[in-house]
Length: 134
Image 1: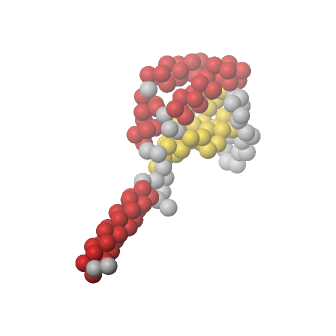
Image 2 (image 1 turned 90 degrees about the vertical axis):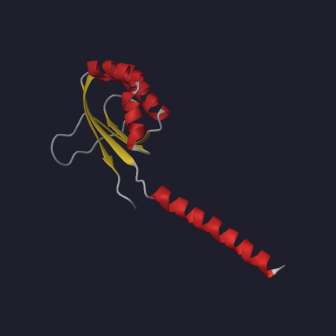
Image 3 (image 1 turned 120 degrees about the vertical axis):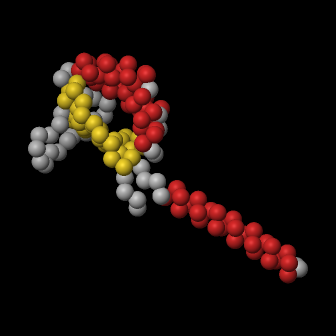
């Protein structure tokens, strides 16, 4: 093989590897967003039937993933173990790719309408935290 072709091929391979490395570093640079909710469920049966399953489906359709669901209110919730302060009746931890995706879910008219149902059966306290780079 001609020396020029070898050099050209080496340059193309180097560019491809460099581009892949930059893409990988760029993808690592944006940490996920964690959404945490404490829910004071007042009507466990109605919350578990009329709100929780529909809310979970809507969250998943927007790209949210559940890391943990605990307490009362159905939907496969696990036990919550309290350490400091009062333990919530229900707690949920979700992970999102970005704050924009989380905001899109929260601003969805379908979610706002569903939240009116949830507000009849529970009081919510929630917040989001941007993850730290790994």
